[in-house]
Image 1 (tube, rainbow, N blue to C red):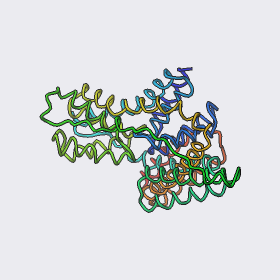
Image 2 (cartoon, rainbow, N blue to C red; image 1 turned 45 degrees about the horizontal axis):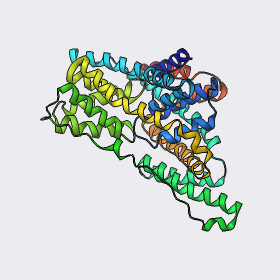
Image 3 (cartoon, rainbow, N blue to C red; image 1 turned 90 degrees about the vertical axis):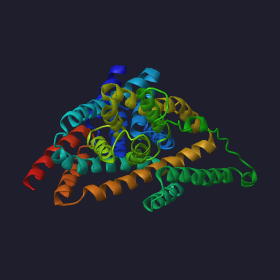
Image 4 (spheres, rainbow, N blue to C red; image 1 turned 60 degrees about the vertical axis):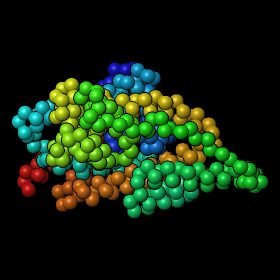
Length: 384
């Protein structure tokens, strides 16, 4: 079983371009549609819950899927397998960057991969949306979350707001249908503080710890408190490594973020690149371990609780609202990505061809869509 998990997430780690929304879309296709390891509803519950905890969403979804399929061993195998290709490729590029000051030209291939990934995300949004929108109330909640997220509200606040408002509306509706007098009954939401996991670790240049320990603690802190997209990572690392410690220049940090963007898998593999810049292979190892370790911890705690939440009417209403809110956030991400990617007729041609293939051959592996987009993109890019 663990071999199946390892093979699947190694493959996804090598082909998962396009950011968390694209990665999750590919996982849904592989885990739910093709292998039927879990129901679409449970997958959707995991997506919604993952959006509410710190860390890289797609990596945590890989860990969730591994845990569901193979318990703690599956959790470790899935997470490590998904992360490994990005870390390997990023580490190789870091070596070239540090020793030769350059990296291979990959723009022609990415030119074609990006529009194809947009279509893969749209396909996942369509399938997950059909499951998430269980009635007109959830449709209204999803539309509201979509609106506020498009207006610029942070993704975590959008999802949390949608979940809370939806929980109140859906729970009240169900209670009213059961008994009109039940509406006046008070209900309380007991929330345990997670502050012990969110306390920043103060690390400064004057700390007496060895540099490797400093590096590890910095990335451990970032992994434990990072909400939002990979771009939020820039702000954290700029404050720590550029402004406070002076271990990197601003340009070096930008180069590292760029490397994380055009390699497959989680963008947090940027940590591998930065760790190598600062302290070679040992630095790459401790930085990578530090930033990803919290995700394994959070998922191990959260995953067993999700089925229990489904058994509670109040918590189930919250999950339903969070799920439809998560789909709305995926739509927002697709719109933003589309604005950056769909810039000329070549992008639209690749997207149209990808859409024809995706919606005509529903069982086709998404890897072929990515590879096809890369080939067509290269050809169109070279002819200008």
